[in-house]
Image 1 (tube, rainbow, N blue to C red):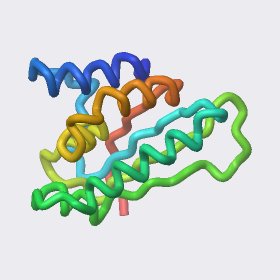
Image 2 (cartoon, helix red, strand yellow):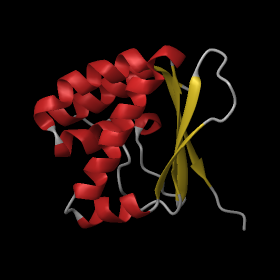
Image 3 (cartoon, rainbow, N blue to C red):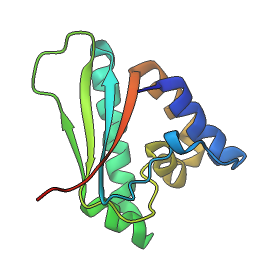
Length: 139
């Protein structure tokens, strides 16, 4: 599990100054599939979903062939169970594009760089924590 501040700060810093991020914070899935779990404050779920919609629109508008491939297999789910302390959203990538970065902050920065600071602050307020998991397909 990663603290959301570390995940989001890593995303912003990586775009502004481009230092290498630690491997644990990369959103690349070399095993061919992966998932990001976003634990969102229940009272902020509507705002998070508005930003998720922006991410999806950014992917759909992209002319980058890698982003187009990602968009074709990037699924977003919301937990159906009533939230306890957080609503859980899954960003599911199957297949994941080899070597492609699935960082949602990066996707937003490519499409709406002028709005990135405000979107980043909203995400920080929305998210309790983020978990990343690479997956190996068994069947």
